[in-house]
Length: 297
Length: 243
Image (cartoon, rainbow over all chains, first blue to last red; front, side, top):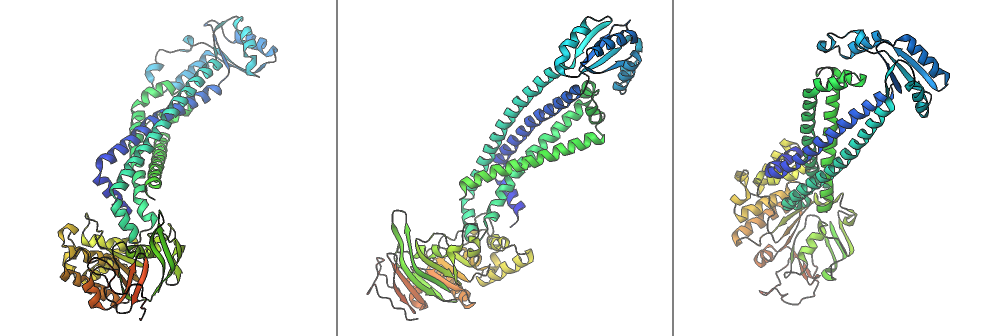
């Protein structure tokens, strides 16, 4: 007995229920996918900032290596500094050029003079940061101090919020999908009760009877997840230039966002698509299995 | 060989379906089950395909205790036992061919074998020219023939029929019985639950009379002992196993 033919017949005979099931799966994976991508992005951004020096001290336009050396000596004298790195105006220009290499417009008119030199400092322990801050704030030639901890804390708060909201929403949608698929399959079991009875009496194995329903549920999940993933992939590809301007400076994103034809982008989209379709299939099959367990003794 | 050994079946509420039935049915037998409505004929047949669970006793088919079959492998028993119903139980959205082919598809037969197998049984039941008809385009007799074809296409060792002529006119009913005879001639054990006195009396085959769940007669060349009110005629309670 051809399972695929059976599944095709099931879907053809009740197209509205099939559409409802696929649409629910589509929405689940669309919303779940958005939150998944947002969480992944925020985790990567978080990782990037966590790996950066804990304090970046931007010097005034007139200050340079002398002021930086002076500050460095004072900081190292505390014994609470793990390392320092001086970034000159020329180094800053090189970094700026590298970050904006794909946007020549941003490179025009920018010279080393207008970029500040900076001193990057890492503490031996984050708890010493407040003590170090006291020394920095009183030092000569300091224009602005950026504490990565502030950025990291803020990002962490956002990431956690995204995880909680996304996770809860995704869980509710998964539950909704299971219920919808279960209900659709239960209706189909009821519609095909005579056929199931006959199949049972003529010697069909339990798997022969159940398989079309399980595959049908899996198909709804597979299709819904596939369409949602393709749309999300398309949206990311469409927004790539904007995303690149925000996140392009983070190495993890560079390979991914540099071009829609880059290997990293294509592989990532393919893995995302395949993974979602597999999860969708399993979710749909699970919904069907629950219905079969409940309504097909 | 089918053996019922002290078989009892009680429905919920202790309502008896069969009571302490012991009977042996050799391979290749043609046998009628008769008795008034509610006597236990259908229970007898349903126990044989394990559509019902026994309350007591054992049933063996080919020396195999059918209570060993569970939900997971019960289909293996049902592939040995074909069944025909009074109400045909055909799928109305499938053609005659598809209704019959379904059994061979379940068995995983290749397409060529399915085509050949279905055409063979369609010829046997005289429906060779109706393969593409849907059940609602057939007469009652043709539907029953289709149902028989479906029951035998997998080559079962046993063929059960529950009131197969109940909805048919006498002439058509005889046509159906002829098919059962042909199937029996090929070596299949045939057990028919029937109310048709004319057929039972003229066929002169082994007849088991069931009344209130018990076998009251077992005759090698049986007669239909029920009167027009469905009561056992003559001396009930006699076990006349002369075959």
